[in-house]
Amino acid sequence: MLLAVADAIAAKGFDLETQVWIEAVELSRATYHLAYIQLTARGLAELVVCGNSLTFETYETALTAAAPVFLAKNGDPFAKQKKTARVEGEQRHRTAPHSWTVSTLPQQPPAGHSQACSISIYEKQLCS
Image (cartoon, rainbow, N blue to C red; front, side, top):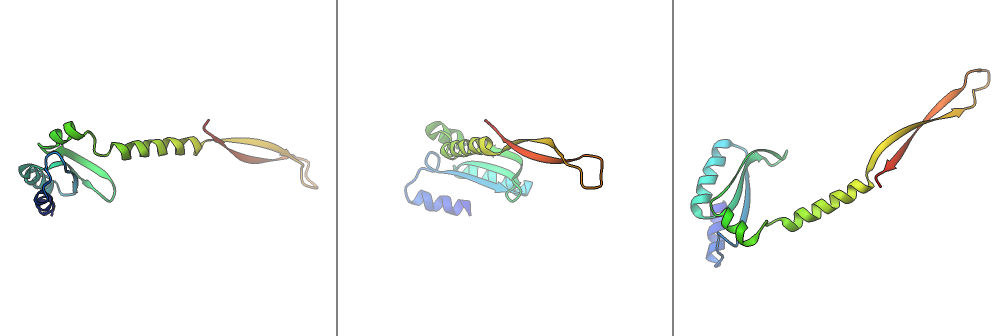
């Protein structure tokens, strides 16, 4: 399918080596290697991943031969998204529960009991 998409994009006049970036994930190791060979031969700038796209497990990755050419000209194609995700993660970290403390408050003993009871209260402390 990626080869058909590459043909359609090239027909529109785009340079596949410097204007198109593709990331493909393949679960089977055999078809991962086949995809790498075919996409490299076609001249696509691509990151090929052997992994599971449902569980985000990654077993192996490879850049095609055109990938360094694309990256040298354009830089990281997902730099903006990575920066946004990093900033959002830092904001979540600042507002997420950082630690829990336990404090014990004395309570009056119930009628008929001579021992004092205690209640544990969990207080959420936020990162500063």
